Amino acid sequence: MVERPSSDPPPSAPAAVPPDWPRRVPHPVLAVCRRLRDDGHAAFLVGGSLRDLALGRPLPNDWDVATAAPPARVLDLFPRAIPTGLPHGTVTVVLEGRAIEVTTFRGDGAYADGRHPVAVTFVERIEDDLARRDFTVNAVAGDPLTGALVDPFGGLQDLAARTLRAVGDPDARFAEDGLRPMRAARFAATLEFDVEPATRAALARHHDVFRRVSRERVRDELVKLLGAPRPSVGLRLLADSGLLAEFLPELARARDFAQNRWHEFDLFEHTLRAVDAAPPGPVRLAALLHDLGKLDTAAWSDDKADRTFHGHEQRSAELAAAWLRTMRFPARDVEHVAALVAHHGVYYDDAWTDAAVRRWLRRIGPERLADQLALLQADLVAKGDRPDVPAARAAAGRLAERAAALLAARPALDENALAIDGAAIMRLLGIGPGPRVGEVKRALLELVTDDPSRNTAGELERVVRERWGRPDGAGTTEPA
Ligand code: ATP
Ligand code: MG
Image (cartoon, rainbow, N blue to C red; front, side, top):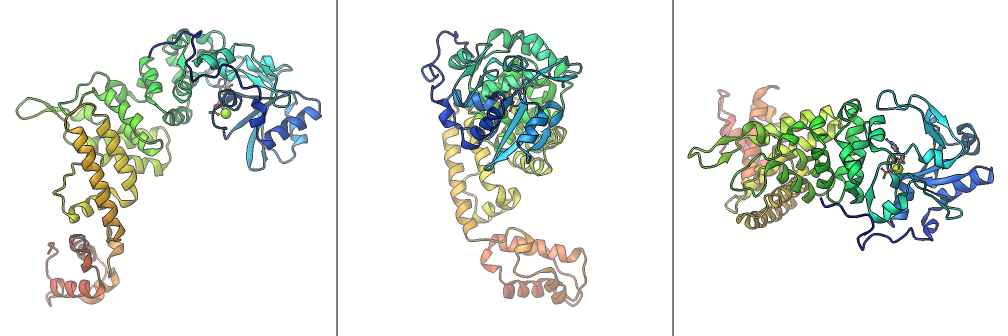
């Protein structure tokens, strides 16, 4: 990425903070500040909420207010506030459906473990509170009642120049708190800012501190990073600084890992492009992990002319599930993302019969259709400039249309949707519960997948009697 000189902001950058910025502050946030002010305490908007207002970005969901009032006084003024982080001086005031975090001005003492300050001390002046913050653009305060801005570290100039710069000495900042390098990558991607060179260089020098940060906190920053317009910006910073290898070593190893003639890019570049092309959410996570198994499954084709990656989808799904669990993603995400990865290789052509499309829908799970198709398109885009890519993308579009049309007819895609149930099968065959019932159900599902019009009670009863209802109880579960 090319560094932009800070004196030369791009045309999209605001020349200055809009003077009427307080007018966009929602009423409940103003009410909280006014209450504090009326009680004799300074109150400022800080952090992401002020930054986003200053940038003219969409209004944030989280509002951070910093105040000189001590925590106990804040709780007196807002009796229904939730003491979300009282040891750190934070309470959450919920007003008109908005969560407003009110934190007493504080200075952090020493950081012994690279994660948390040893002692939190409350301070009198907003400037001392801003000094503990990570990046200059996060270290600006604004009084929404007067419009006054407090900017001791040049954060406004960095905002205008779209530069991410550590407050003070970047090595000191990153050594204090191992999460900050991850936050740097996150902000570079979400804000689309360049990282100032000294800050960028320091990212690579604090791996030991980074290792002590909990997986959950790394995960939360990564999820935010993946919500950026182009997550590749942040992922590249993490790879360049060596931090990616600390929590996702397979992807770090994908750098310069050559693919085959179907691909313009090496495995790392391909993955980053797939992530950028995917919609935010689980599909992006799946894109990030979809090809990790290529490292283990790479082989040479029989004629030794090119590389193959047979079985890489399944291997990637195993690696993805294991990694997602390590990072403490919720079980639902693990399952969904690993399933998307497992089925990301879709080798569709128009010769597929309707039954073949229905079997594919059964395999992926119809509830995953939209995400699976989105992943497929992202994967195809990420192959780059290859002659077969446009045709493959068009074919994937036709698969989407056919799948939607077939699903509209509500076909039976699992055994619970069969027109007869296990009890009926047992009654018809005069048998009790056992594996036989399952075998019959599976065979019936194949039958109605081939021809959904046969999924009626009358027809399935007839088939069961005819095919399995011999006096000797034998019969075949071979598909008809
Ligand atoms: P967003 O809310 O969009 O994620 P944010 O900048 O508000 O971005 P938060 O995590 O909500 O980020 O933190 C609020 C503010 O607290 C930050 O802007 C920064 O000033 C300060 N801060 C948060 N985490 C750290 C940290 N690890 N080190 C130093 N300062 C921090
Ligand atoms: Mg915030």
